[in-house]
Length: 229
Image (spheres, rainbow, N blue to C red):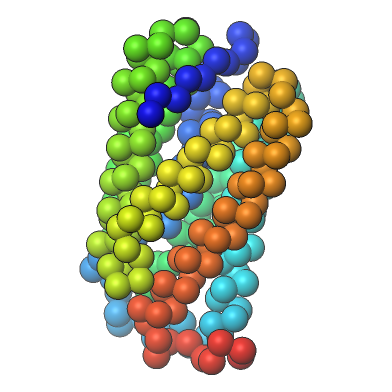
């Protein structure tokens, strides 16, 4: 399906790069199938299942909040753009740190490669939309979503029993669709649509956080206390 975007004039390539960082910060949870079993039980045992669930939700809520802050600041040319972007990037680090005890530091290298590809793809997509080149938009959009499917496949390979490929693909596509809808609505001055999109993102991100935390707990059942602890 072709996604047609029309961006307001005056939005620079900085938006393309900064926005992609936002759109795909969710990919920070991409993990290595190899893992780091030596440290998993020790690290996980410090936290109950409930505490881990709540912490994961907090990290992903921070993600959508700071994504929105950057979108608003960039669109309105506010002076806090660098600070907002730095805070969002710090959230990426925090999410990555949360899963390193389970899947190992090697995930960072894989994440870097995937995010670079995503950033390049998003920049191409937004630049094509700004220029009004419909063919380029279609090409860039197809490549961007295909890369999202690669992230989903990587997640599924890391935890195939609890993160099935189809569910991971749907999760990633929904998050990208909703965040892109939020950003485009803001850029076009459709503020009511912008708010509706953000509310939808909030509901979706909690579902994503729960899917990820529940998958980790199920994959490493001996590393956590009971669900109500």
